Image (cartoon, rainbow, N blue to C red; front, side, top):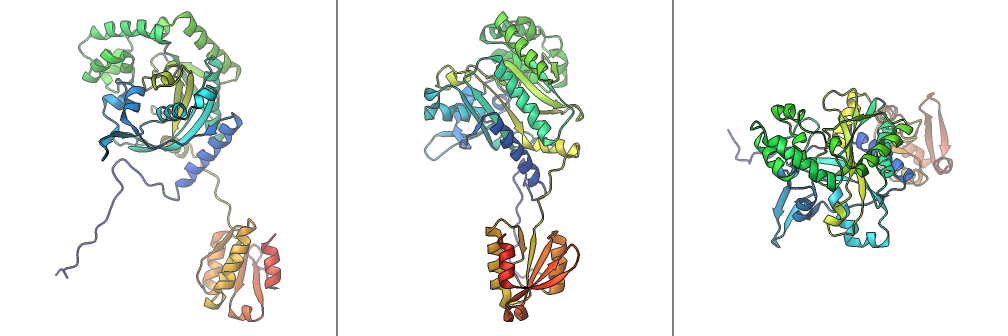
Length: 425
């Protein structure tokens, strides 16, 4: 019979989100550490923007034909002040908004920034694709020369190498500037209109930005894209030179590239160079990061005409690739000392020694409770510490501690003053 007590309620993570538990957190920390080191080498500074932005910012930046808008992937709500806000689905628009609002482009249009943080897209959760995901990105503003595109791609490959990947290459395309895009879009619309087999989304894309049909996942649409005109054939001399220079710089740097004329990326603000870095041992879902040039976005969002190029990487998919490739972050170093209090009388003294040791940069394991010598020494061995310091009432009365070398088992008695000197080194 029920005793009348209410049933205990349990909770689960929201669908499409995932907890990062201590066994996985080192992967995030490792990639973030490598990214910070590399960004510093290339002269990038960190920027942090809010998770919430005005909805219009993304409506204007990512494009009405992007999957984010067409597939209704944005988390949008009206706040108590009757303002429409959106949880950021990507990082570039917020970075541009922040630099324009702060007046950074008035000081110099050359800005090199990076960001790390959560993004949100409402899409069907699947392996490596979450509704809340973590992204690292970088943006280089103010440099129209194709060398900036090449450097962004080189940095991207160097980051993956620093993490531990080896068999990587670059898929590269040039989708032209505004002039050749107009001509190409007209040719695409005409070609798409010639068949009624396109899915409803692709017919909608064709009216707004027909290049988006190359992103369609419907098998029949994917097969039909092979017969569409190639953007490479519509590039004007300026775009051709830009593309050729990017390829020449990457070739000189020893970066393997593969030209992919169907690569367009998922956001409408790209122009000229678009790219993805792929791992050749991961099968069909081998794209690990991507990016490209966007020379019109800053002006579109209220800033001065400012060219830009950048990339972003999803950490969840990257970590899956790391695990598949058996890339394991280096373990955290073990504690140098295990401090063991044998009874309540010694807790204060042992706590004080733990504080002293940590203030001098020593790694210390201390359970913050009394333990028997047997249980404590077992825990000390498991911790990987090199020495255990053992104090109980008997040691306190004589102002000493037991110092045990956990590597060879030798044990000696030292005064507390000697212990303090050792822990202060």
